[in-house]
Image (cartoon, rainbow, N blue to C red; front, side):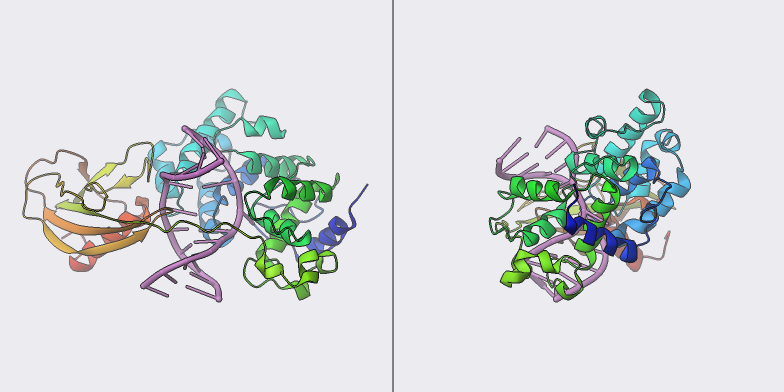
Length: 342
DNA sequence: GAGGCGTGGAG
DNA sequence: TCTCCAAGCCT
Protein backbone atom coordinates (compact mmCIF):
# COMPACT_ATOMS: atom_id res chain seq x y z
CA UNK A 1 0.00 0.00 0.00
CA UNK A 2 1.31 3.36 -1.02
CA UNK A 3 1.13 6.76 0.51
CA UNK A 4 -0.22 9.34 -1.91
CA UNK A 5 2.12 11.96 -0.46
CA UNK A 6 5.04 9.75 -1.41
CA UNK A 7 3.65 9.46 -4.95
CA UNK A 8 3.42 13.24 -5.24
CA UNK A 9 6.91 13.61 -3.86
CA UNK A 10 8.39 11.02 -6.25
CA UNK A 11 6.67 12.67 -9.22
CA UNK A 12 8.25 15.96 -8.15
CA UNK A 13 11.62 14.24 -7.73
CA UNK A 14 11.39 12.75 -11.23
CA UNK A 15 11.24 16.30 -12.56
CA UNK A 16 13.35 18.23 -10.07
CA UNK A 17 16.02 15.88 -8.71
CA UNK A 18 19.37 17.57 -8.26
CA UNK A 19 22.09 16.10 -10.45
CA UNK A 20 24.73 15.07 -7.92
CA UNK A 21 27.90 13.10 -8.70
CA UNK A 22 27.17 10.29 -6.24
CA UNK A 23 23.62 9.73 -7.45
CA UNK A 24 21.88 7.48 -9.93
CA UNK A 25 19.25 9.42 -11.90
CA UNK A 26 15.65 9.13 -10.57
CA UNK A 27 14.02 5.82 -11.42
CA UNK A 28 17.33 4.57 -12.81
CA UNK A 29 17.84 0.89 -13.60
CA UNK A 30 21.47 1.33 -12.66
CA UNK A 31 21.92 1.35 -8.89
CA UNK A 32 24.27 3.87 -7.31
CA UNK A 33 27.73 2.55 -6.37
CA UNK A 34 27.68 1.69 -2.62
CA UNK A 35 31.21 3.03 -2.17
CA UNK A 36 30.28 6.40 -3.62
CA UNK A 37 27.00 6.50 -1.68
CA UNK A 38 28.82 5.72 1.56
CA UNK A 39 31.56 8.28 0.90
CA UNK A 40 29.04 10.99 0.04
CA UNK A 41 26.84 10.23 3.04
CA UNK A 42 29.76 10.48 5.46
CA UNK A 43 30.95 13.72 3.87
CA UNK A 44 27.42 15.13 3.99
CA UNK A 45 27.01 14.56 7.74
CA UNK A 46 26.33 18.06 9.11
CA UNK A 47 27.82 19.47 5.91
CA UNK A 48 26.33 21.20 2.87
CA UNK A 49 26.32 19.78 -0.65
CA UNK A 50 28.26 22.82 -1.87
CA UNK A 51 31.05 22.17 0.63
CA UNK A 52 31.22 18.46 -0.21
CA UNK A 53 31.36 18.52 -4.00
CA UNK A 54 35.05 19.27 -4.53
CA UNK A 55 36.12 16.92 -1.75
CA UNK A 56 34.03 14.10 -3.22
CA UNK A 57 35.61 14.67 -6.65
CA UNK A 58 39.12 14.63 -5.24
CA UNK A 59 38.54 11.53 -3.10
CA UNK A 60 36.97 9.49 -5.89
CA UNK A 61 39.63 10.52 -8.37
CA UNK A 62 42.40 9.61 -5.97
CA UNK A 63 40.69 6.52 -4.52
CA UNK A 64 38.14 5.14 -7.03
CA UNK A 65 37.37 1.99 -5.02
CA UNK A 66 37.13 1.20 -1.32
CA UNK A 67 40.26 -0.96 -1.66
CA UNK A 68 42.21 2.07 -2.88
CA UNK A 69 41.09 4.15 0.07
CA UNK A 70 41.86 1.31 2.49
CA UNK A 71 45.44 1.20 1.17
CA UNK A 72 46.04 4.93 1.64
CA UNK A 73 48.27 6.37 4.34
CA UNK A 74 46.47 7.92 7.32
CA UNK A 75 48.20 11.28 6.82
CA UNK A 76 47.25 11.35 3.15
CA UNK A 77 43.57 10.88 3.94
CA UNK A 78 43.60 13.42 6.78
CA UNK A 79 45.29 15.93 4.47
CA UNK A 80 42.65 15.33 1.78
CA UNK A 81 39.91 15.89 4.38
CA UNK A 82 41.50 19.10 5.73
CA UNK A 83 39.03 21.99 5.69
CA UNK A 84 35.91 19.82 5.66
CA UNK A 85 35.67 19.62 9.45
CA UNK A 86 34.54 16.98 11.95
CA UNK A 87 37.77 15.08 11.49
CA UNK A 88 36.59 12.02 13.40
CA UNK A 89 34.65 11.34 10.21
CA UNK A 90 37.89 10.97 8.27
CA UNK A 91 39.43 8.74 10.92
CA UNK A 92 36.34 6.51 10.95
CA UNK A 93 36.12 6.62 7.15
CA UNK A 94 39.54 5.03 6.90
CA UNK A 95 38.76 2.48 9.62
CA UNK A 96 35.56 1.56 7.81
CA UNK A 97 37.28 1.28 4.42
CA UNK A 98 39.84 -1.09 5.91
CA UNK A 99 37.20 -3.31 7.51
CA UNK A 100 35.27 -3.50 4.24
CA UNK A 101 38.40 -4.10 2.16
CA UNK A 102 40.13 -6.56 4.49
CA UNK A 103 37.33 -8.35 6.34
CA UNK A 104 34.39 -8.13 3.95
CA UNK A 105 36.08 -8.77 0.62
CA UNK A 106 35.63 -5.20 -0.53
CA UNK A 107 31.84 -5.49 -0.46
CA UNK A 108 29.66 -3.22 1.68
CA UNK A 109 26.96 -4.91 3.81
CA UNK A 110 23.55 -4.57 2.14
CA UNK A 111 21.47 -4.36 5.32
CA UNK A 112 20.90 -1.60 7.83
CA UNK A 113 22.24 -3.73 10.70
CA UNK A 114 25.33 -4.75 8.78
CA UNK A 115 26.10 -1.17 7.83
CA UNK A 116 25.32 0.16 11.32
CA UNK A 117 28.10 -2.01 12.76
CA UNK A 118 30.80 -0.18 10.77
CA UNK A 119 32.81 2.77 12.16
CA UNK A 120 31.27 6.17 11.42
CA UNK A 121 27.96 4.69 10.24
CA UNK A 122 25.12 5.56 12.62
CA UNK A 123 21.35 5.14 12.35
CA UNK A 124 20.89 7.76 9.65
CA UNK A 125 23.79 6.76 7.40
CA UNK A 126 22.98 3.04 7.65
CA UNK A 127 19.39 3.67 6.61
CA UNK A 128 20.43 6.02 3.82
CA UNK A 129 22.95 3.60 2.28
CA UNK A 130 20.55 0.67 2.66
CA UNK A 131 17.81 2.61 0.86
CA UNK A 132 19.87 4.39 -1.79
CA UNK A 133 22.43 1.74 -2.70
CA UNK A 134 20.48 -1.44 -1.90
CA UNK A 135 16.80 -0.51 -2.37
CA UNK A 136 15.92 -1.45 1.21
CA UNK A 137 12.75 0.26 2.51
CA UNK A 138 14.64 1.74 5.46
CA UNK A 139 13.22 4.68 7.37
CA UNK A 140 15.73 7.44 6.71
CA UNK A 141 15.64 10.24 9.28
CA UNK A 142 18.01 13.18 9.07
CA UNK A 143 17.65 16.89 9.66
CA UNK A 144 15.72 17.39 6.43
CA UNK A 145 13.29 14.60 7.26
CA UNK A 146 12.81 16.01 10.75
CA UNK A 147 11.94 19.40 9.32
CA UNK A 148 9.67 18.12 6.54
CA UNK A 149 7.80 15.68 8.80
CA UNK A 150 7.48 18.24 11.61
CA UNK A 151 5.77 20.56 9.17
CA UNK A 152 3.64 17.96 7.39
CA UNK A 153 2.19 16.80 10.71
CA UNK A 154 2.45 20.20 12.45
CA UNK A 155 4.45 18.74 15.31
CA UNK A 156 4.83 21.50 17.88
CA UNK A 157 6.68 19.46 20.47
CA UNK A 158 10.30 20.63 20.28
CA UNK A 159 13.24 18.50 19.17
CA UNK A 160 14.68 16.20 20.36
CA UNK A 161 11.55 15.13 22.27
CA UNK A 162 9.63 14.84 19.01
CA UNK A 163 12.08 12.40 17.39
CA UNK A 164 10.03 9.22 17.99
CA UNK A 165 6.89 10.86 16.61
CA UNK A 166 8.80 12.19 13.61
CA UNK A 167 10.09 8.71 12.89
CA UNK A 168 6.55 7.33 12.95
CA UNK A 169 5.40 9.96 10.45
CA UNK A 170 8.40 9.24 8.21
CA UNK A 171 7.84 5.47 8.44
CA UNK A 172 4.23 5.81 7.36
CA UNK A 173 5.34 7.70 4.28
CA UNK A 174 8.24 5.44 3.23
CA UNK A 175 7.34 3.40 0.12
CA UNK A 176 8.30 -0.24 -0.47
CA UNK A 177 9.37 0.56 -3.99
CA UNK A 178 11.87 3.31 -4.81
CA UNK A 179 12.83 3.83 -1.15
CA UNK A 180 16.16 5.34 -2.20
CA UNK A 181 14.55 7.87 -4.49
CA UNK A 182 12.02 8.63 -1.77
CA UNK A 183 14.77 9.33 0.77
CA UNK A 184 16.65 11.54 -1.64
CA UNK A 185 13.44 13.28 -2.65
CA UNK A 186 12.75 14.30 0.95
CA UNK A 187 16.31 15.60 1.22
CA UNK A 188 16.03 17.59 -2.01
CA UNK A 189 12.72 18.98 -0.85
CA UNK A 190 14.25 19.97 2.47
CA UNK A 191 17.28 21.53 0.81
CA UNK A 192 15.49 23.49 -1.91
CA UNK A 193 11.81 24.03 -0.93
CA UNK A 194 11.10 23.12 2.67
CA UNK A 195 14.08 25.12 3.91
CA UNK A 196 14.66 26.13 7.54
CA UNK A 197 14.03 29.88 7.27
CA UNK A 198 11.71 30.80 4.43
CA UNK A 199 10.06 27.67 3.02
CA UNK A 200 8.83 28.05 -0.57
CA UNK A 201 5.48 26.40 0.16
CA UNK A 202 4.04 27.74 -3.10
CA UNK A 203 6.40 25.38 -4.97
CA UNK A 204 5.97 22.39 -2.67
CA UNK A 205 4.41 19.19 -4.03
CA UNK A 206 3.15 18.41 -0.52
CA UNK A 207 1.64 21.78 0.34
CA UNK A 208 -1.95 20.51 0.05
CA UNK A 209 -1.17 17.88 2.70
CA UNK A 210 0.89 20.09 5.01
CA UNK A 211 -0.71 20.78 8.39
CA UNK A 212 1.83 23.46 9.28
CA UNK A 213 1.12 25.33 6.07
CA UNK A 214 -2.60 25.15 6.77
CA UNK A 215 -1.96 26.58 10.21
CA UNK A 216 0.44 29.22 8.91
CA UNK A 217 3.31 28.02 11.09
CA UNK A 218 5.53 26.19 8.59
CA UNK A 219 8.46 28.59 9.04
CA UNK A 220 8.27 28.16 12.82
CA UNK A 221 8.77 24.38 12.74
CA UNK A 222 10.49 22.33 13.89
CA UNK A 223 10.75 23.98 17.29
CA UNK A 224 14.06 23.51 19.06
CA UNK A 225 15.32 24.09 22.56
CA UNK A 226 17.57 27.15 22.87
CA UNK A 227 21.30 26.54 22.71
CA UNK A 228 23.89 27.46 25.27
CA UNK A 229 26.16 30.40 24.51
CA UNK A 230 29.71 29.60 23.38
CA UNK A 231 32.44 30.48 25.88
CA UNK A 232 35.59 32.39 24.87
CA UNK A 233 39.02 30.77 24.95
CA UNK A 234 42.47 32.10 24.14
CA UNK A 235 45.84 30.62 23.34
CA UNK A 236 49.17 30.99 21.54
CA UNK A 237 50.25 29.34 18.31
CA UNK A 238 53.95 29.07 17.49
CA UNK A 239 55.14 29.24 13.89
CA UNK A 240 58.84 28.45 13.57
CA UNK A 241 60.62 28.52 10.23
CA UNK A 242 64.02 27.13 9.29
CA UNK A 243 64.90 27.86 5.68
CA UNK A 244 62.10 26.35 3.62
CA UNK A 245 60.85 24.19 6.45
CA UNK A 246 58.23 24.79 9.12
CA UNK A 247 57.91 23.29 12.58
CA UNK A 248 54.79 21.14 12.44
CA UNK A 249 53.21 18.28 14.35
CA UNK A 250 50.39 15.80 14.07
CA UNK A 251 47.80 16.37 16.77
CA UNK A 252 46.85 13.51 19.11
CA UNK A 253 44.54 10.99 17.45
CA UNK A 254 41.46 11.84 19.55
CA UNK A 255 39.67 15.03 20.43
CA UNK A 256 39.60 18.40 18.72
CA UNK A 257 41.31 18.38 15.30
CA UNK A 258 42.56 14.91 16.21
CA UNK A 259 45.08 13.43 13.81
CA UNK A 260 45.42 16.67 11.87
CA UNK A 261 48.57 18.53 10.87
CA UNK A 262 49.16 21.57 13.09
CA UNK A 263 51.57 24.13 14.50
CA UNK A 264 52.43 23.80 18.19
CA UNK A 265 50.12 25.74 20.50
CA UNK A 266 49.70 26.49 24.15
CA UNK A 267 46.68 25.26 26.02
CA UNK A 268 43.43 26.99 25.08
CA UNK A 269 41.66 28.46 28.06
CA UNK A 270 40.42 31.64 29.65
CA UNK A 271 43.94 32.55 30.74
CA UNK A 272 46.48 30.36 28.92
CA UNK A 273 50.13 30.07 29.89
CA UNK A 274 52.63 30.61 27.06
CA UNK A 275 54.23 27.33 25.91
CA UNK A 276 56.85 28.00 23.22
CA UNK A 277 58.43 24.84 21.74
CA UNK A 278 61.87 26.39 22.25
CA UNK A 279 63.34 29.55 23.74
CA UNK A 280 63.59 32.30 21.17
CA UNK A 281 62.67 35.88 20.43
CA UNK A 282 59.06 35.16 19.46
CA UNK A 283 57.47 38.00 17.51
CA UNK A 284 53.74 38.51 17.86
CA UNK A 285 52.20 38.97 14.39
CA UNK A 286 48.59 39.36 15.44
CA UNK A 287 45.54 37.29 16.35
CA UNK A 288 43.43 34.79 14.46
CA UNK A 289 39.82 34.16 15.42
CA UNK A 290 38.02 30.91 14.95
CA UNK A 291 34.73 29.46 16.13
CA UNK A 292 34.35 25.77 16.87
CA UNK A 293 31.14 23.93 17.61
CA UNK A 294 31.20 24.74 21.29
CA UNK A 295 33.57 27.68 21.87
CA UNK A 296 35.13 30.79 20.33
CA UNK A 297 38.91 30.91 20.11
CA UNK A 298 41.46 33.69 19.72
CA UNK A 299 45.02 32.56 19.03
CA UNK A 300 47.93 34.98 19.18
CA UNK A 301 50.33 34.06 16.38
CA UNK A 302 53.98 34.06 17.41
CA UNK A 303 56.75 33.58 14.86
CA UNK A 304 60.47 32.89 15.13
CA UNK A 305 63.38 31.70 13.04
CA UNK A 306 64.35 28.32 14.36
CA UNK A 307 67.18 28.71 16.79
CA UNK A 308 67.47 25.62 18.91
CA UNK A 309 65.92 22.19 18.83
CA UNK A 310 62.21 22.13 19.37
CA UNK A 311 60.83 19.94 22.13
CA UNK A 312 57.93 18.95 19.91
CA UNK A 313 57.14 18.58 16.21
CA UNK A 314 59.45 18.26 13.24
CA UNK A 315 60.81 20.65 10.63
CA UNK A 316 59.63 19.81 7.13
CA UNK A 317 58.34 21.52 4.00
CA UNK A 318 54.74 22.55 4.67
CA UNK A 319 51.67 21.50 2.70
CA UNK A 320 49.30 24.33 3.66
CA UNK A 321 46.39 22.45 2.13
CA UNK A 322 46.78 19.77 4.79
CA UNK A 323 46.10 22.23 7.63
CA UNK A 324 42.67 22.47 9.23
CA UNK A 325 41.17 25.94 8.87
CA UNK A 326 42.31 27.27 12.23
CA UNK A 327 45.98 26.66 11.39
CA UNK A 328 45.49 27.71 7.78
CA UNK A 329 44.45 31.09 9.20
CA UNK A 330 47.65 31.28 11.25
CA UNK A 331 49.70 30.25 8.22
CA UNK A 332 48.00 32.92 6.12
CA UNK A 333 48.81 35.59 8.68
CA UNK A 334 52.49 34.60 8.64
CA UNK A 335 52.77 34.50 4.85
CA UNK A 336 51.11 37.89 4.62
CA UNK A 337 53.85 39.33 6.80
CA UNK A 338 56.75 37.38 5.35
CA UNK A 339 57.36 36.51 1.70
CA UNK A 340 56.74 32.81 1.16
CA UNK A 341 59.67 30.72 2.34
CA UNK A 342 61.56 33.66 3.81
C1' DG B 1 21.67 11.16 27.24
C1' DA B 2 24.13 15.16 27.06
C1' DG B 3 28.19 17.04 25.41
C1' DG B 4 32.27 16.98 22.19
C1' DC B 5 33.22 17.57 17.63
C1' DG B 6 34.43 22.10 12.12
C1' DT B 7 33.36 24.85 8.71
C1' DG B 8 31.60 28.42 5.53
C1' DG B 9 27.38 30.55 3.92
C1' DA B 10 23.04 32.90 4.70
C1' DG B 11 20.25 36.31 6.80
C1' DT C 1 29.37 41.20 13.73
C1' DC C 2 26.57 37.52 15.25
C1' DT C 3 23.48 33.70 15.23
C1' DC C 4 21.94 29.79 13.03
C1' DC C 5 22.84 26.03 10.89
C1' DA C 6 23.85 21.47 6.95
C1' DA C 7 22.32 14.47 4.63
C1' DG C 8 25.19 12.86 12.63
C1' DC C 9 28.31 9.93 15.22
C1' DC C 10 30.62 8.62 19.34
C1' DT C 11 31.25 8.33 24.20
